[in-house]
Amino acid sequence: MHPAWTEIDLDALAANYRLLEGRIGAGVRVIASVKADAYGMGAVAAARAFQDLGVFALATGTVDEAVAIRGAGVTLPIVLFNTYLPGDAARLLEHDFIPTIDSMAMAEAVSRAAPRPRPVYVKVDAGLGRLGVAMIEAPGFIERIAAMANLDLQGVYTHLAFAHAGGRDWAAARLGAFDALLAELKAMGIQIPVTQARASSCLLAGLGDSCSAVCVGHAYYGLSPYSEADVGEVAGLRPVVRALRTRLVRVARHRQGSDVAIGGLYGLRAGMRTGVGAIGLSGGLSRPAPGQDAHVLVRGRRVPVIAVSLEHLSLDLGGVDEAQVGDQVTVFGTDGSGEISLDEVAAWQGRSPLEVLSMLAGRTARRTLDGGGAFDHSSEAPAGDQA
Ligand SMILES: *Cc1c(COP(=O)(O)O)cnc(C)c1O
Image (cartoon, rainbow, N blue to C red):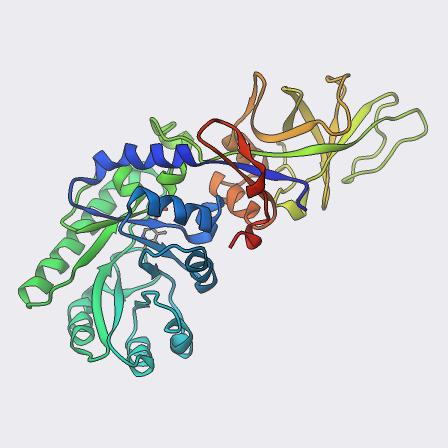
């Protein structure tokens, strides 16, 4: 039993999906990124939702996540985006996942371990400088992969993440270079069914390319790849993880001489009313960054966070006299007329919104909002138990 939970809005996921359709273009296939536990919302729930929405394939990094998705009855192709070591090849082939090839050692290991031709994608480094075959080596490398007996080259992709809108020019140039590579492969007579370069940032920046697919994560979850300070809110995207809540497990009034010490803070004011919420560092929160004040909502009102300890939040309930044990504590989300945004929580923690969400994965229960606006409590389970 997790004492804290997130609230997941699948209607928002569908609305974000529809909103982006116009930017993706007709006839372009969609690979939905569900990596990192679907950016905190839960990989299995996200995979099921994307299957219902009709995406072409899913992409994730870890094999365990892919196994959980398959185990939940999702039949879509699953591309493994992470780079693995050649020694992992046999394990990667135990399931019907599509591995990424970005070295000759990996290509040979997969080819050796595969009893018959296996679909694979090749990743090209178009400038991010992280994973993938260098652009300059890509034509020769891909030609060799296409000729290997046990590899069925189904896709060639790259990743063009850029952190702020100013990265647009860089991305446009890199997209151009990737398009030129694809033209060169075509001229060499190599057919590649799936080609992909654009992720959320390219789509939101309005960039186009000649590829047959896109791969989107951030934007489907209502997260902007850019900071709000940089571009403002991205019009129309709705947060899929709508709230993080727990409950007050204790309410107390501190008398003179009964001062407590929590989180390095000594000497609470005499007569101060405090409350304790059941989420802390182990639930994925962090302490307020230097100089930052943190607040949560109790009975719709903002109350200051006094301390964040391993499993608890200590609160100053001075402004909410009627607060009682069992009351909801909202870390972000709405409660009555009160609202705390994920961006605000990210700001007091000195993290990005995505970092906040990814810290929650596996540490909180999840409740899924159904079409009628109620939360399905039967879906309440820690992330790892959802499969
Ligand atoms: C994660 C990932 C994406 C999705 O990126 P977003 O910014 O979340 O849309 C696309 N392509 C690749 C190769 C990725 O690894």
